[in-house]
Image 1 (cartoon, rainbow, N blue to C red):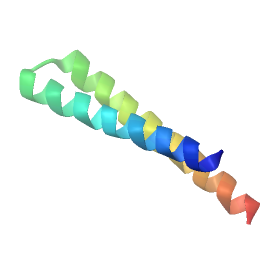
Image 2: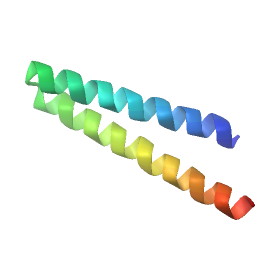
Image 3: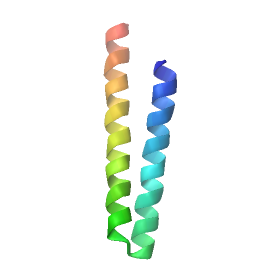
Length: 57
């Protein structure tokens, strides 16, 4: 299940990056902040998956 979780985390990170970019270009600070939050959450979840993988080895 680790690979599926990593894919979901990467998708969340990419979605966050897209929201952040659109927010910057449209001047929508709320959308930009939501994108930054999503991007950070995806990165943190991915880091957690990497830690779990390190302990499996």
